[in-house]
Amino acid sequence: VNENFGTDEKSIIKELYGSLARLNVDYVDLLLIGGVNPQVSLKQISLGLLKAKQLHLAKDIGTSNYRMKEFVYMNELVG
Image (tube, rainbow, N blue to C red; front, side):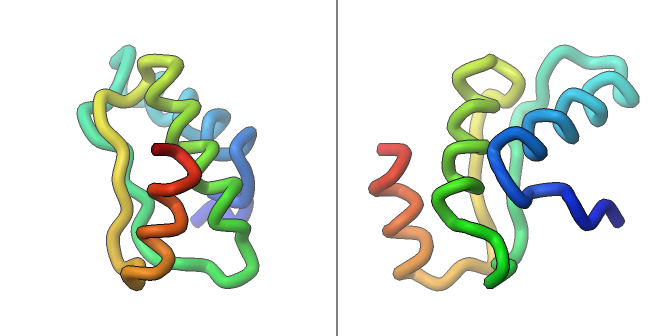
């Protein structure tokens, strides 16, 4: 487990590039963040997911195990 994964936009993209290289692919169909870490900014996670999609590293992005209010807030951030 990488404790630095998903702590901010930069780390999400860095770890995703590493995963893509290990998988020998250019993108993933779905980048899913599972579980809320109260010590990590929802804004930073949202921006990281959005950046992955903008860079065409992920076709789709999503979350799991988030409460509705967190999901709504993140959706408002990334549109």
